Amino acid sequence: MSDNLLSKMLKENDWILADGGTGTELFKMGLTSGDAPELWNLEYPDKVKQLYKSFLDEGSDLILTNSFGSNSARLKLHGQEKNSYMLSKKSAEIGKEIIGNYNRSIVLAGSIGPTGEMIEPLGSMTYNEATNIFKEQSRGLRDGGVDVLWIETMSHIDEFKAAVAAAKSLNMQWCGTMSFDTSGRTMMGITPLEFKNLILKLDHKPIAFGANCGVGSSDLLRTIKSFINKDIKIIAKGNAGIPKFKGGKIVYDGTPEIMAKYACYARDLGASIIGGCCGTTPLHIREMKKSLSENLTLREISLDMIEDCFGKFSSKSDSSRVKDTSKNKRRRRVH
Ligand SMILES: [Zn+2]
Image (cartoon, rainbow, N blue to C red; front, side):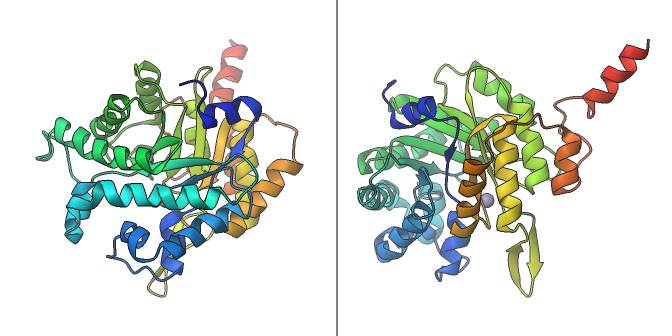
C-alpha cells in the first residue's frame, strides 16, 4: 500500500496542487441545475475530458473524477440507480485516458460525495446500506483506475465512516474532507476538532484529510489551522470566495489573485494538498500554482492575519480553541 502514487508525491514534495470546482465548471459548459453531472461521463465524455484537461493544463497534480454523485441513492433521482458502478468507472477511465497525455505524475482521485440521505436514526438509511452504496461506487472508481478514493463535502460523521468502511473493505487508499459552514461546523454540527480526532483514531487512516467547499477563504483557513497534526497530511480545497446570488445566478467573488494568496496561506498553515472548490476556475489554479512556486518562504500565520487578508470569520469561533490564543498567553504572562 505504501507505493501509492499520492503518498509518493507527498513524500517528494512539500505541497501538490489539486484542481478547482467540478460542478461550477460543468455548469459553464452547459450543465443545467437538476441534471446529473455524472451522466455526462456517458453522454458527453469529451466535455468531461475537457474539464479534466483544463485543470491539468494549468498545472494541477491531482484531479477529481466526475463522480461526486454517482452513488445509487443520488442517481435514483434520475432513474439511474443501477448505473452507479458503470458511471463511476467511466469517470475514472476518462481521467486515466487524459492523464496519459501528460508527461508528469498526476493523481487521479475518485470523488465520492454524500448520498443525500440521512442515516438512522435521523433518516431511514442504515449504516450498512450506506456502506454498500459507497462500496459499489468505489468499486467502479477502482476498476476505472483511480489512485485513491476522495471522500468529500461530507457533513455527517456516520456517513463519512460508512464511506471509509467501503474503502477499507476494498483495501483502497483514501483521502477525506468535510465541509464546514457559517457556524464553523458542518451542517450536522461537527467541529473541525471533532473531525480531526475521528481521523486520528481510525484504523484505516487516510493519506490526507481536510476541508472543502464551505464559506470563504477566511473560514476555511481557520479550519485548516485546527487540523494541524504530526501524522496525517492536510487538504485545503476552499471555494473561490463566498457564493453570492447575482442576476439569478450564483457567482463566486474570489479573484485569481485572492486564491493565489489563499494557496500560500493554506500551505504556510500546513496543508500539503491545495486546491479550490466551487467557483475555482482553471485561471484561479494557474495563479495558485504561480504563487506557490514563487513564494517559497513559509510564514507563521495567525488568525488575525487571515482576517486581515481575507475578511472576517463568519462565526466567532469554530469551537476548536479559545478564539485568540495569543491574547490569552499575553494575559497569563502578566500574572
Ligand atoms: Zn464546493
